[in-house]
Length: 557
Picture: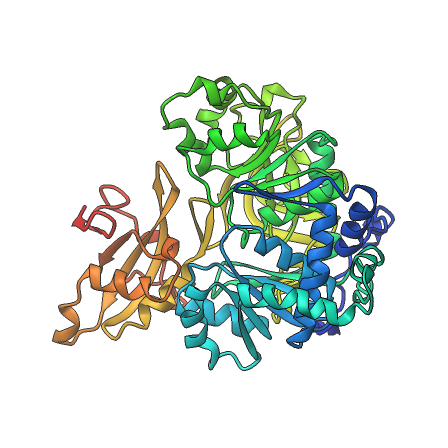
């Protein structure tokens, strides 16, 4: 039977995207994010909410500023369901704009400032962004791709938008004090509902270009609730994030801080050499990181004053290297626990802080409340405990679907279960451990890279006939991108160097997607269906990087 689709708030999604019946009774009515901010501004207006490099904003100030910014957004034509691309580095502006777009009922499209022409064009065009906001140095890049994005009507420097916000807000406020009253009452806010889409968060798919995940107010608040409850966050806590705000992690940190009523400290970026100093000075008690970050931290010279002089009592991390887990807790004097999630799912698994025996096991933990996991074989049948299979996740507030890709969404959610593409084993404690991935994905230093996206860019080079990208292990970054390239047969193509190909890719992709290793091949092993047999590319090689050119070192391996 063909899949039927419907249009919900301007988004094409499978007709049956709702949670299965067995889970609906577990769902509770949640507020929208602007309503949650308005409540915090009413109940604790003078308490710090956002902190960045010595500056801080209280809940009351953030509420007032988002009212002003929302007014400025309306002034440039942004209304309910309009997509707004935010292409900014970490700072106070990104979360303020995120919240302001939510206030007008718009949809936030976070954009990596490091995107090249190819991936930037795709995200802006695919999302249908109406407005793109960036810093002055981003304007030439945005302007260069604007003609390729038919829905993109307006480009704004963040400063220009911010400067126009007070004036626009005053035009709405008829008398002194009206702005503050409007902030408290949520005056002229869009009538958003918990199930409305508030962000299109792009994540690299297993094939093709990055896919936009449709994430709702309910999704973000449920994710924040799961972290709050699992980590026992309390009014005296302070959250800290070092990841870029175009990731999803700072966003759920922000919503968690909003939910609990505590400060969120935003670092400009992750720096292994200054991280613990920042943690100490900020008074942070909780942070989340990804697996490559602790590896870099452990390589730093020991600093007892900072590494034991902090207030941290909980750390969540995705992909903790098992061999380092015990050492992390011993060196930094606080518990680290593994968690598993994705942009599509939010949080699915978490190792409890009460179980010290999981340290070093590689276990990702058990399903968080409201989630259910099953492990299946290729036919979709459950496998016994201890047998590897694909992990499927049911329940909870997940993404509505992939923006504009209803068939992909239907493949992702089948019979109420979300397919993760990850191969796992369930142990005797009911915890799950990853043993492999079905996805054609490369995960470099916490960044997901779709091999097909890199291949498409390489094949755009006039000298390249075909390309195939695979992951190779790397001690520091987890995985690196290795590209196998077949050149065209004409003599001019034979003179192309790996450095030229790397530079070509660097101009079109984010830096983390550029292949670290490039190896030329005369031909590719093929499957019976005439596809490149990637599983055979590394066969009969002395090691994974043998015969390749290292683009970072500028030398043949």
